[in-house]
Length: 105
Ligand SMILES: N=c1c2ncn([C@@H]3O[C@H](COP(=O)(O)OP(=O)(O)OP(=O)(O)O)[C@@H](O)[C@H]3O)c2ncn1[C@@H]1O[C@H](COP(=O)(O)O)[C@@H](O)[C@H]1O
Image (cartoon, rainbow, N blue to C red; front, side, top):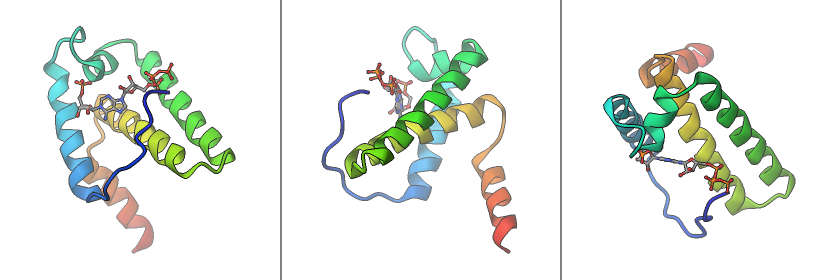
């Protein structure tokens, strides 16, 4: 686990996810030497998928500890790695939104 963020202000989830997904998309063309995201996008697919599973486990462990700040921090890692995974496999955020919307209409 990296340095835990103890105090954060609320944000706008739509803007945040859209902005982060756009940066991740741009990293398709970046060099893996300078960008962790580019390394996940261009390296072995299994390395990314393993990382995704690890991050999910870290969220679960934080929940077991009932540690609010830690849950938020690990959820951030999980969502970031999920966004990288969606980018790598060509699923857009608009598609994801459509999938979720179709379930509660
Ligand atoms: N949002 C993130 C983001 N969240 C998490 N991470 C990385 O995901 C990794 C998480 O790994 P771990 O949980 O294993 O934590 P760790 O501290 O590295 O390792 P351990 O101590 O657990 O062994 C860390 O390397 C984090 O830096 C992220 N890396 C990048 N971004 C964003 O992605 C965009 C592109 O950044 P570059 O990757 O630098 O191009 C930018 O907007 C960044 O802010």
